[in-house]
Length: 157
Image (cartoon, rainbow, N blue to C red; front, top):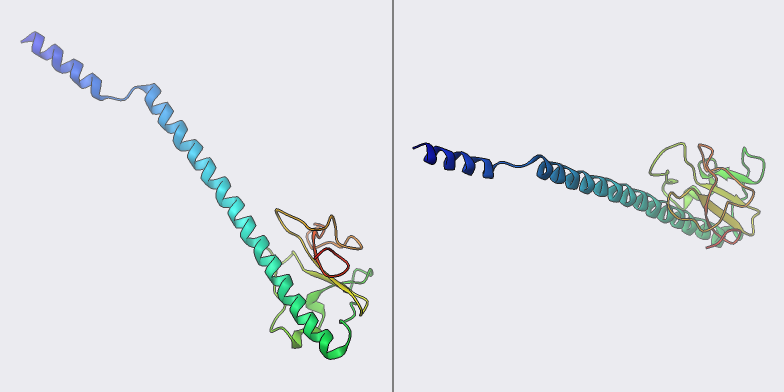
């Protein structure tokens, strides 16, 4: 009978997980969680950048319609004193676009516009990529971040 109890005890021990096995599983789950969080973060940044680019293209289309009607682009007058102005302060292109889009992340980030009437540049702050080192004149796109994406003849298209 004691031999039967001994075998039964050994069988119960074989069914339990060792501390090493538990640590390996917890480590793998932790790594997968970290990978998922990083992927999600990159995905959301890419989505916001895509939205910003789309917003600038919509504004660009409105500016082109304005120019075709008026033979020039709206001239920027901005608080920064370098020809830049937040698009929210321009009233001329709003006839051609229902509303000026806002940055998808934060209202303190702004789209900027500069024009002398014959050419223009639209600028934004992207999170992952850029098309210009900084916007002409070094404008800030809000919260102290330099604009790093430009559309129009002054910046890269």
